[in-house]
Amino acid sequence: MALLLLLHIALLSTLCAADDPYVFYDFKLSYITISPLGVPQRVIAVNGAFPGPVVNTTTNYNVVINVHNQLDENLLMTWSGIQMRRNSWQDGVLGTNCPIHPKRNFTYQFQVKDQIGSFIYFPSLNFQRASGGFGPIVINNRKIIAIPFAQPDGDIVVLVGDWYTKTNTALRATLDSGEELGMPDGVLINGKGPYRYNSTLVPDGIEYETINVDPGKTYRFRVHNVGVSTSLNFRIEGHNLLLVETEGRYTMQQNFTSFDIHVGQSYSFLVTMDQNATKDYYIVASARFVNESVWERVTGVAVLHYSNSKGPATGPLPVAPSDVYNQWSAMNQPRAIRQNTTASGARPNPQGSFHYGSINVTDTYVIRSLPPVRIDGKLRATLNGISFVEPDTLIRLADLHNVKGAYKLDFPNKPLDRSPKMDRSIINATYKGFMEVILQNNDTKILSFHMDGYAFFVVGMDFGVWTENSRSTYNKWDTISRCTTEVYPGGWTAVLISLDNVGVWNLRVENLDRWYLGQETYMRIVNPEENGKTEMAPPDNVLYCGALQSLQKESESSAAMPLHCDNSKLLLTLVITVLAFIFSFR
Image (tube, rainbow, N blue to C red; front, side, top):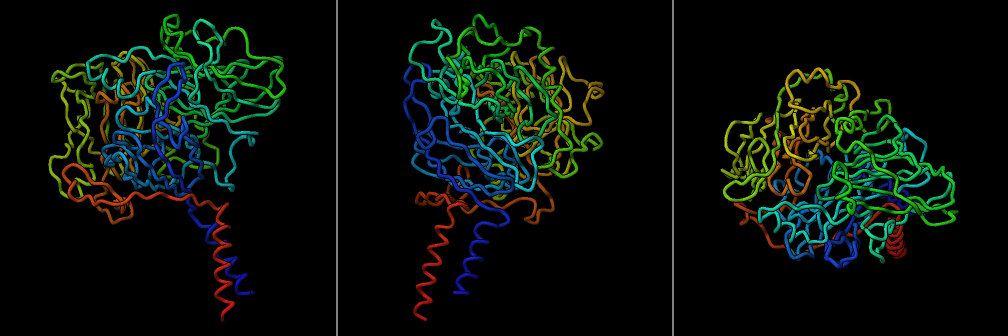
């Protein structure tokens, strides 16, 4: 019995106190029919749910997600904001992963190394995010690391986004025909349509989101814009939003009455329930920087319900900011976001790069976006005059197998005076370099730029054309580091990136219409002295396509089974029972 007790303790320690624990998820992506705006439509569900479930994990944990494609077209899932340290093989975009074919599955495995905070996942192919398949990712602090604010009484995820009643297939066809998408049909909050605040604009019978709270308590709201292309203003009637986190970085705490959230961005706010309970309160996400009288229907409305509320939400919605035609004023909000440099928790990688203002820049890229144009008869969008063509063969696999012509390492470091073209041109970045990237938006609308594999320092933002003199306006002390930043039309945003994460990383415009039309490229970062420590080898289940299709082996679908520390005692009990049975015959 003493031996069995020792075995019990040893197994429990192994299963529940490992240095890098695992969490497992099984995702089945399929179509369901719902009517979020009163019109029946086909959406993409994850495990039958729209939106998908929360991926809940902790700093440094390993995450295993077995994705089953039950759609009728190819699929990839990307984990936006997860840096995939040394492991771009798991990034889930077409330059790093071959697609998962219908009726097949693929298991992603990655570590959330040195990260905390609020992120999202979504399908990256075929405009599918416009039909769903998205959900939140929450990375918790380890218990030994304190958060820089009092522990909230609850955690609330809010997914907002513009929405079309057309399917992703129909929206693709619209762009392929050379037309723009036009105004969305509405805004969803957690996959549901608006509360009927206006009987003319909102038809009867729409299911809306209700968030239940208790008076006097403080909740952490994790708010994500998972929409197609519309910037949204988020506000809660009568309540302040205390900003505390931006895509994995704790911020200096500031109060806002409303907050602009651009496509692909994520924020955390603390909201205290300090109002009286005479009625419920509106939660609003409405289209930003548009003619509101025309775009009035592009408004999502949910209900904040106090447990002691005496009646429904009534009256007009809380007003949006009045600077629709004064984007200079609106730019003050992102400029004001500062990093909490004294907070414990995950730091920007590599360690020490938070002293970014004193690091010498090794390369500068000025990347200009323009409105869509026709190239070879097709409507396309460009970065530095290049509309990206999706690769047939994975970029790093092409390197490892010496496939020639799969891509070109000639993405220009500034706009060139030449005709736009379609090409597979990517950035040849230098390992351990410190890159300055200027995102110059000469398009007609706000664009969100996203970088996989990294968090970059947003050091500058202004209107006009960036020049070298613009560097004098940079914040070199306490700017926020994040993975998705807005760039205002007719303006620029400057970011600094410490290039320590080896791999191939997607740089894209997160607005789905522009991304689909070609506003993306990749950054290839290779360690010339690679010894297996700075880049992982391709995983055993890597998929092959394009020029390497012949290497693909047929395999049966397999699913990952959830096994968390909390339920590992069941396995432990089984093991001990078997051992006791064996020992009884000795």
